[in-house]
Length: 402
Image (cartoon, rainbow, N blue to C red; front, side, top):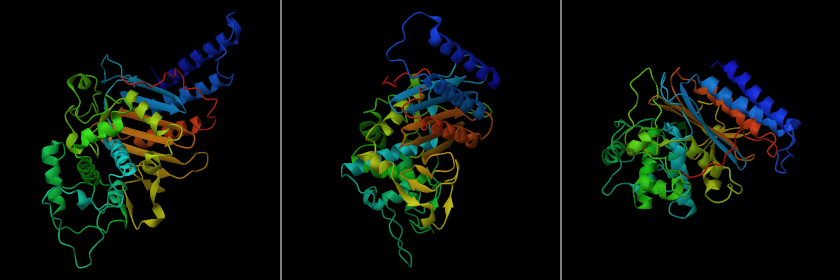
C-alpha cells in the first residue's frame, strides 16, 4: 500500500469513528469518553506515526510511543522483504548503540546506591594484575566513569578488538589494548564517540556489581521493568521473532553479543521499549537515579572538539549516553540517541518535561535513512507535548510485561 493510500485509509477510519461518536448509534456516550477534540488529535498522531514508516523506506519497522501514562507498541511492514510474516510489537530488533542508554541507566543506579561514583577512575575497576601504560612527560588526568559515559575519555571509536567475540575473550582483549602505550587526547578536553569506552564502562559496572554485565543489567534495570526480550543473548524462540535486517547483505546472525552488550549488543522489542520509555517518563522520574541518568554533564561550548555526536542534529550537550538538543523554533528541548549497524537502524527521543517519547527500530533496507526518521520522530514527540491532557494515542493499550 502506498503512503498516500495509507493516509486515506487512516482518514477514512478516523472519520468513521467520529461519525459513530456523533450519534449514529442511540447508545449513551461513555462517561470515560475523551474530550471532543481528542479524536482529531489521535488522527494527527496516527498520521505522524505513519510518516515515520514512510520516511524509513524500510521493509519492516517497530515503534513504541509514550505520552504521559499512555503507551503503544506496534509494527509496520514485513519481517523480511517479500515475506508473509508481518512485523509486530514482539518482533526482535537490534538496538545497536541504544544499548549505551542501558549501560548509563545501570551506572546511574549504582551511583544512586553509593556503589560507584561518577568521578571514579576506570583503573579502580581494572582486572586483577592489570597495569596501565606509564604516564607521559605531562601526566594526564585519569579516565573516569563519567568520561566514558559522556564520550569525553579521549578513547577512539574502536579499540582494535574484534567485534562479536564472547565476553570471555572480548574483556581481556580490550584491557590488553588499553594497557598499550598510545597517544590519546586528554580526558575531558573533547568529545569523540567511543564504543570501546562504553565496553570498558560495562566491564567496570560488572566488577562493581560483583557479577557479569548482563546479570547486573537484568537485576537493576530490565528485570524490574519486565523487559523479558531485552538481552544480549537471545534464545532460539526470540531469534525466531527477529527482523531480517538489511536484505541487501547477509543478515546479521541472531547470536550472543554479551561481549559488547554495553556499547551495542542488546536486542529488544517495541513492547519492551514501551515499558522502558514509560519508566523514563514516569511522574517523579526526575527524582532518584533518573535525575542522574537524564542530567547533562558536558556542554558543547566546553569542548575543544566534537566528533560523531551529531547524527540526529547538532548536539548542545552530553549526558550519560543521552545527546541533548536545545529547544529550537517549534521544538522543545529533547534527549536523543541514535543507533546503527549490522543491518539495523534505531532512534529514541524523549521530552522529559512533557512526558513524551518515541522509539523506532527498523531494517536498513533503503540506505541510511536515520536522519529523516529522526526528524519525523522529533516532530511526533513535539506534537505529543503540545497538549499533554488531550492527545490520545490511537489504539492505546498499556504496555505490560510478557
